Image 1 (tube, rainbow, N blue to C red):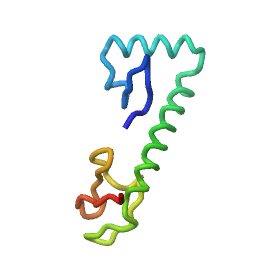
Image 2 (cartoon, rainbow, N blue to C red):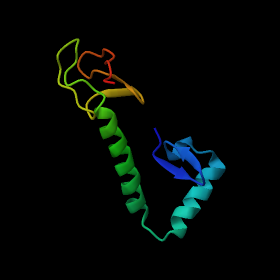
Image 3 (cartoon, rainbow, N blue to C red):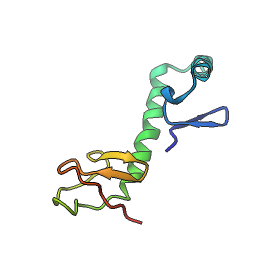
Image 4 (cartoon, rainbow, N blue to C red):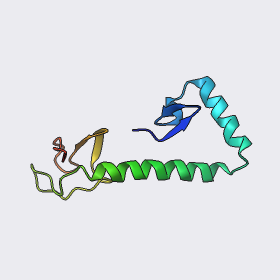
Length: 95
């Protein structure tokens, strides 16, 4: 699950970057002359697209409790693993 790349390496968040890479990335963002909130918006869009794509793996309802499932209401526990928000059971993914 990659949200963005910087200098050929993939990261899921700014916090996942080593401190020296965080500083270099922050400097690069400033050099682009784009407002921080615009870049944050693009990064959020990438995260949302990733979640929507994973949502296609979910069953429509929980096989345990029958609750209606959607990518934004489940608790994602991995790239292809999620728990039901209603009963907490691990959900089988579609293949």
